[in-house]
Length: 589
Image (cartoon, rainbow, N blue to C red):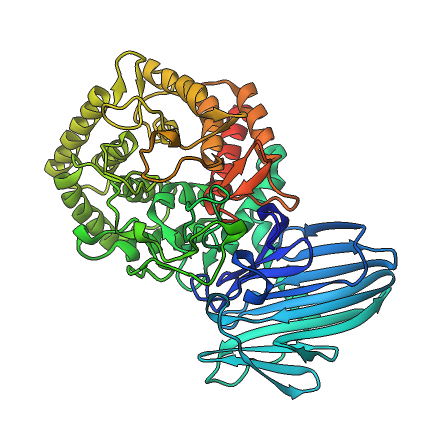
């Protein structure tokens, strides 16, 4: 059975990522890329679906772990009656091949260890053919994939598993390197584990030391940015929402989605997170990925794309996997890619505007793409859509969607790069029309607050973003009332729900955890309204919900006190970074 979600930590090489449990087991890894089939899938099934565990034989008295400062090098310390042993896990940032390196180091006494490697390609179903190349090398092949395992010790076969027993004393170390490549090419060259460790630490430290100062929360901000870097796909600049699929938003529910893709809804907030922290190169790569991904016919724009900009993300279910804690179905692909969400147009326009204001170079064809998309949005902005939360029910006139449509035209109307005065005036007229529509139809007249959709009574946490996009000032009475109503109806145990799931608006069974990104948005709302004490108190509580190595899932169950949803979640870490910088700027001011 898989561990709690928060008991995992991520290692990665900016092409893919693995989840390492606090028990020393790697239970999730897709190779060669984030969106490839998994070879370790115990996270969504059991050990027979693939895992790689290295742990003491004797009972563990205490386990502690941390990342090497400023890196994704994970260090886990096991304490037993025999002594103490450290397990170091990392993935070198190699440009082509992916490797998982595991080093076992004796710290105190002499500790007996056991290794169990179960490789099952194709999401836990295909057993490879294992052959011994030499005394230190094994080859595992199935179809197009091969893994090469190199170790310092003898490894033997045992009923479809590769196992080993060994001991490490104080000052001793044993290394294991698992390398992936296509089965039809020569195996990757052997890595020196210690040299790879030094090189990997140097890579991450060099990157993370560029992070801008974020006051008392600098370490948390740096950790979140390292997670975002680890979730980026180096060849293209795309950033996946999470490295996992089908971790449930509610235990035992069908709210299980594949998040190994790149969402346009994250565009502006991701760009701002990188720019706020001083990472212009990453912001530029993300901006360029956005422009390439959406290029084409405006009426074919999607809400998400593959790592390289792929558009076909066909959703299918994996019947042989039992799901995380029996939360079924396990899904690969995401049918929401074909939904209509009006907010993505505003995200793109706002992201391009923010990039230009921060001095990123102009991409002329990007402006042409923007204008083509606005021409299409002009025809469809008044239609209902599925909204930012990708409801799988009847489309509605979501207020956040209409506001982001306003953002799209507002930013273009205010842009110095919209050189045609007539076109600029046209964009302003449309923006004003949308603004008036939202203020007339998106406000509950009794409570004088914005609501989830035209004519509804429900509240939605996405309304917290209205001030951030300058739709209205924070002191506007409708904004203040909206924040108060969200506190009243969406706060649970001090954390924010996305919306009122019991209403059935999303077409799914009720129930989910508090959405962490929305909770960080409420922090920013408090900052905007000048209530810094309230903002700081909530921010401190939120960062305390991260796991022992500072990672956040998509959601949090405050009653069961556990993480929910795909993990680690880029959206949560992005919101943390932006809330921290908003709070620091306000405190300094």
